[in-house]
Image 1 (tube, rainbow, N blue to C red):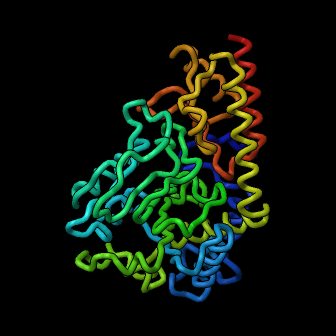
Image 2 (image 1 turned 45 degrees about the vertical axis):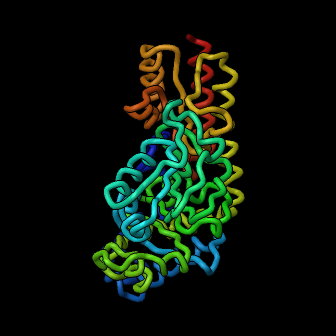
Image 3 (image 1 turned 180 degrees about the vertical axis):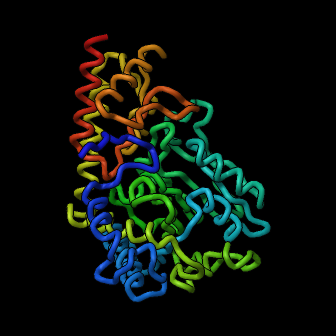
Length: 358
C-alpha cells in the first residue's frame, strides 16, 4: 500500500497504526453494530472513549489535578477570541509576545475586545527567533499570551518566559512533543491536527482557579465554565475526532510516553539541521540556532529556480508538504510526533544528494 512521506504542516501525518485501527473499527465499534460516528455522544460507549482520552492525556503530559482538561471545537483561532472574552476584564491589559503570524492573529482578536499591549516582538528581524528577554513589566495585566512553536517561521521557545501574571500558551504545533511543566500555565490550548489527531477537536488545559475568574457576561457557548461544568458535553462534541485523539494517545503510551517521543523528535530534527549546517550555505535555515523548532524545519536554497527543482525532485521521491508557507517561501519540513525517523532519514539523504549534484 502506497503511503506518502508526509511533511505537511497541518493537518499533518497520523500514525499508520492509528489509521489502521480506526479502519478496523470504523464499521462496527466494539460490537455495537454502529460506527463511532453514528452513536450518541451520551452513550456509555462514547463516554468511555471520552474519559479514557482525558485520562491518557493527563498521564502523558503529567497534568496536575489543579487543571481541567476540556475538548472543544473551533480550532486555535476560536481560542484567540475566547481567551480575551473570558479573561480580559475592564481596567486590565492583555499582554502578547509576538513570534509569528498566529501570535499576531491572537493579538488582533484581543485588540477588538479590550486593551492589549505587545510585551516583546521579533517581527522586525523577520521572526527568526523568539525574544531573548522581556523588555517591559506588565501593569494591571490580565495575562501574558505566547505561541510556543511557530510553524511558518520554524522557531520555538526552548524555555518559557518568566512572567509576573498568568501565562497562556497556544501550543497547537508542539503540544505533547516534549516534557513541560503544565503547572506553570494558567491555560494551554491546541488544535489537534498536528500532534494529537485529525482536525475537529481543540484541547484546552486550564487552571481551575483561573477558570473561576472568567467573565460571565458572554453567551454560554463562549464561556469556558460552560464546558467545564458539562465535562465538554454542553453541545455535541466532535466525537470522531475525540475517538481518533484517544487512539493517538494510546499509540503514544505504547511507544514509551513523552520521554520517548521527545527523544525521537530530537533525533529527527538533528538529522535535518545537520544537513543544513554542514551544507556550507547551500541550505540556509530561517530560524536562529537558539530558537530552532523541533517540529518545523524551515530553510532556503540559493535561488528560486533551485528551490523549485528541489521540490519537484522531492515530490518524485514521494515527499509531500515541503513548500514553505506562502508568506515566507523556501522549504519547510514539519516533523511532528507521527512522522517516523525513516522519513526524516529519507529527506536528509535527498538533501545531501541534491546539494552534491548542484
